[in-house]
Image 1 (cartoon, rainbow, N blue to C red):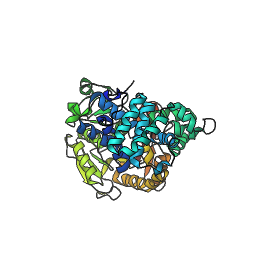
Image 2 (image 1 turned 30 degrees about the vertical axis):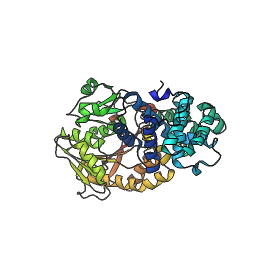
Image 3 (image 1 turned 90 degrees about the vertical axis):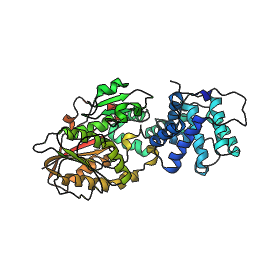
Image 4 (image 1 turned 180 degrees about the vertical axis):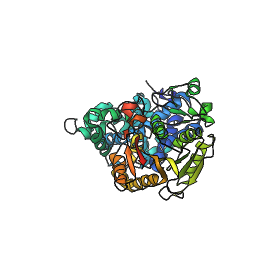
Length: 464
């Protein structure tokens, strides 16, 4: 489907006094915040759309322009390197952002070539300076002379020559990520995953138990999701904030995979008390809210721990509508302030590389490095060890990551369990009823191309 705005119908006579198109100007500012200031695209974009009062077709155009530019950034860099007479790292960053924005419009948005070049030249003149507009015009005209596939053929090795490097360029993933996914999935599914990572995800909602229902969300314009009994999918272009249940905190935005791992912890069988639950790494609080609603129905309470105050405030905001005596503590989960064995169920949703959520975090793939995975490993092990110590005998721990990388998943679990004789890994697959292709167990790895969720990982551990 063509995504465009009224500004695409640009007159052929270039006006030197022409103002920059508002939609593209917003997109440029968002991309600059993400690339130069380390902003998160979803957060920066949502605020920018509200501030600029963009809605409907213009909001859709801006969203695709921002997300697509960031998602395909590495691939576009390879194209642009062939069109610029100096290394890209010698270009001013703001100029490179303009060029990538223009490249995305030319190659993947079906915007008229003249309109795309003309609008980006105007944007350059207004936002950066007249002297840069000539270079933008020349480079984007070179880009427009080939299709996306022709550019791939020009800059990437053939799939027969080097399959993984070809896919890294053609599917816009760093080579090290492609290699890691290939080790996990093999040749048959690798391309399916990379393609799924490049598909913008639909907004998934959660009806918090006892506060809202999926039927209410359906009446508000959503449709029932596949796996979670509390999930509904918002139709393309919908604003979740306009749904009453979401606006009041009775429902929230939460990926279905995130819901499934929280439900697996809540539904794992245990004997005895079941009223004290712990979320050891709670921010920003989506899983906390679902768990709090579930434990409240059992006359229990959730303790949520988050080391950063601003993220702890996000947890409090998520819990505000949930009845019950729930606590949010600001502290280090590796240094418990509670007694050993204080909780019946513990969620350890540890900090990770986020490689399982690349479809909804388009900039993340280019920010992460193999060193990030290595550096996080000690913290992940310490948090899992703390979680096991915090749960009572007979209680359960869910070790969760939003990453399928083996060094963040099973390797962490195996390393911690090797040092303890009071914990065992249990088969978690039966806690995902009707969900297909869960693997050989006992842990569970979800995938975007299999289940349509983020690539969430869960290991269920029982303290003996």
